Structures are given as C-alpha cells and as structure tokens.
Image (tube, protein in one colour):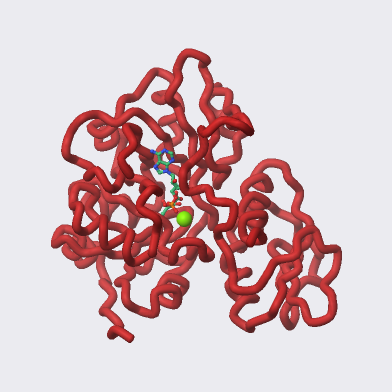
Length: 316
Ligand code: TXA
Ligand code: MG
C-alpha cells in the first residue's frame, strides 16, 4: 500500500497543492469534493484515476462567485434567475463558452458544463486562493458512499489523498443539478435531486423545475442505477429490522439509537436526516452487517433526494 500523505492544515497550503498541479479534497456544504485545477488536464486525470471514475462522466466546476462562472458558461435570462441561489447547493448545466479555463476531459467531451458556487466559506476561500475554477466530484471511490467528514475521505482513499478538514458538511447530500439549456419553454429540468428541493427553488426564483421525461436522455451521465453504495445490501421501506440486520431508522422519537441501530432524525426532520444519511450508513456499514434495513422516509421536499440516494444504494 502507498504511504499516507500529509494533509494540508491551512487554505494556503491546500491552494499551493492545487496550484502545483496536485489534487486535494476539501469540504463543501454538501459533501467533500476531490479538487483539482479545472484547466489542468493532468490534474483532472488524476482525479478520475483516484476515484476510478468512468471518463464519460463529466465533473462539476466550482467557482468562487458568479463572475468566475460567467467566464465559463452562457447565462440565459432563466439561468440568471436561478443563479440568485448562489452561493449554495445548486449546480447549473449550461452551454460552455469557448476558452481554456476548463480542460476537455473535465467536461467529458460535452458542449455543456456543470457549474456551481459553493456556500462553504472555506471552499470559496480555497477557490479564491487558487484563483481558478476547481473541478470537484464527491471525494469517494466511484459508486461508494459520499463523504461528509474529512475522516470519511481518509478512510475511503486509505490516506492516499490529502484532505483539508472543513468540518462535517452542513447539508450532507450532493447539490441539486438543473439543466437550463432550452430557454424556450421557460423551465429548468432537474437532472439530480439534491440538497435544494425543487419546490424551494421555484418558490425562491419563480422558475418551474420539471423532471426529465422518463424516455428522454436528459439526465446526468453519472446518475447510474447503482451508486452511493455501502458494502452491506440495503432493504428499503422496512418497518423493523429482521434478525441479524442493522437498522437505519427515521423519526422513532428517542427509541432509535442502540447497537446496530441509528436514527436519521429521531424527531422526523428531513434536513437532519439528509445531513446524517451518508455518515449513518457508513457507521452502520463499518460493523460489517450483511444487510441494513432502512425505515420508510417521506418522499416530499428533501425526502425526494434522500430516497433517490437510498434507491441507488440499494440497486445492485
Ligand atoms: O454537491 C455536489 O455537487 C458535490 C460537491 C463536491 O460539490 N459534487 C458532486 O460531484 O456531487 P459528482 O461528480 O459526484 O457528481 C456530478 C454529477 C454527475 O452525475 C455528472 O454526471 C453530472 O454531475 N454532470 C457533470 N457535468 C454535467 C453535464 N455537462 N451535463 C449533465 N450532467 C453533468
Ligand atoms: Mg458523486
């Protein structure tokens, strides 16, 4: 096994790694990302390799502010209205502008680009210190649970990837991804449910958010049926665990915790459940159960994204 690398302690140290063509994980408000200079094809390739990520799956480009994003993509009036939610857990897929800010492999050969401005102050400080946009896919090996703490990242990569510790992630679920490519119909299309629920986006911007047609190819290339998976199998919508199963409960009052049993939110709060989803799954998985039974989660608001992740984690 390769040696453990030293972690950067300050934003300046992490920025130096990234400016020097290295890769470094950092916290965002959603999940930890594995960062690299978006313009540096070798560094971006190292990100794909570290994650064992298929090359057809493009990366999200993270910007310090709207002005940085505007150098990379075309903002239609509709996209501009959605961008008022930045900084925040929203990714917009827009038409790429010509230029050399983002290398071709980051976009996996598409003529669109997924961009977001994260809210986590340390993430923005890091992008500012590097002075260039950063690609940052979730800092997990492809297909596995997403990391919401620095320790999750260290465990997942066995210490081979440097991590700037920014504390536990506040949202705990990846950003919501919207495609805004056809301004004609005045709506955005949700490619991935995420930390910003659709209804909230519409309430705050007035922009209707449609779901992709079931038969349309308009979905994020990375939304594979099986993803976000622990080692254990998942059994969803379980009212109670069976003999030998670990149990991920929801809304059980104070009765949720115990051996091989964790509650996503004893009070039944979906924000708390989202924040705990990946870390509770990782904690239950660490004991090596064959199966984790998961209590039903309401499918409203943030529950849409939570159930999306659970369905993919259960698919094999
Ligand atoms: O919250 C997040 O979005 C986190 C943090 C680190 O920012 N990042 C993240 O990245 O979730 P990743 O690589 O795990 O997921 C990116 C998703 C993939 O499903 C990918 O296919 C999609 O974004 N994507 C990237 N570029 C795209 C494009 N041009 N068109 C459609 N989907 C795109
Ligand atoms: Mg991911």
